[in-house]
Image (cartoon, rainbow, N blue to C red; front, side):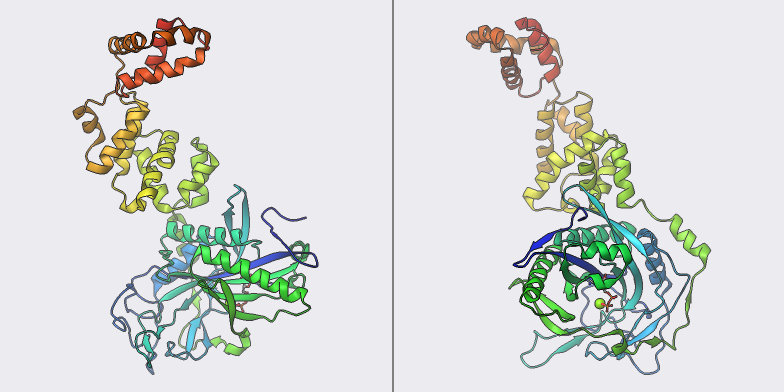
Length: 502
Ligand code: ADP
Ligand code: MG
């Protein structure tokens, strides 16, 4: 039957299912390029970071950058994938104005990383495994610029030769939600690993999305015997650069294919572009086959041979990744939902962990972040990095509540004060006299004042014990929110002679 997450498309002639596989280009975080010493820094003057190798000058020889190899291996290990100790670099031949060599150095038959997997977290709370086919290293091309002169195009080669990891999935995704969830998770993993900054706006992560449709049941047959004949013909949507656009492109493309098939047509395998403005995909070129590129091993480069001990060293240095962190947070008492929200971005996980390290109780810290601090950041349009309150300060507020120094209500005021004025929350609580009143004398006085002002309610509460909550509220108000609610409760019960259940 249909796996969880599979989405059915209703057609005129029956039901269809969507199958998606992705090729993600992730720019390797490294100071210099894959085969040259030129800088990879984003945003430099055009053509300021181009070595002779990157410009395709005759006679120049590529020299492999060990850092890029290490980053690819790290990523492979993070994808729980097989690391191939021997891999080859091939020339993929094609012409493009921003490809001065006339070929791209890539890896074809023998990539550095083989099969792996990524667990995706769906909005429903379910998880699914998406298989990784391979990861290979290749050079990025330069950039053609068409919008700076009415009848000229320019070429900027700064990007030429920067290392990319192409990460290819198996066709294991079943809906636009799963496709977006995959990219989100992959982005989180490479950011945890520190192998790619995941910055989609700057193009350091971009996805080619392959979409096909087939009759219901086709996918399960494919999973059963591995034969692609059970799947429909796919179209590849090039360079989609946001989660939202991926979802939109998949929806549109699947619908388009169903309409063609139901109209008696066939899908031709082609490369399409997604136009976010019109919310449609359109044909770019018919799909080229591997043999069109005349791949052959690059004679300037030796086979890449890795030392198993070196790979083991890298494996030992891997940080805790999102899935493991999530499991640990759940172990510490967090709900699965809170844990996934916190680990989804490395920044929020780090921030949370800093709060716990500073002494905040894990569950309270998670609640405080999701109920109070994240909400304030959202409202102000700020990211965690730009937020005005440090993890240590938020931890101090949460701890003061736990210690009974301030009430939960005052805690929110303290957060607002620290947000607006900065400073140490503990000092602020002392300076402004915000300490919670646990002194029974002061609480009793407040209770007497409330009773004196509402003699009618005193009679009512005997009949309606629920009214006690109203009294607590009034007493809290009377003390400016500083009374300890538990102490108020206890004192009220005695004074009004309420049963324990009340
Ligand atoms: P190429 O490199 O020519 O684009 P690949 O065979 O490497 O071709 O496949 C590229 C991507 O297309 C992979 O992510 C794969 O999972 C996906 N794919 C292959 N067949 C289908 C299909 N029928 N429907 C959806 N995706 C597919
Ligand atoms: Mg492709």
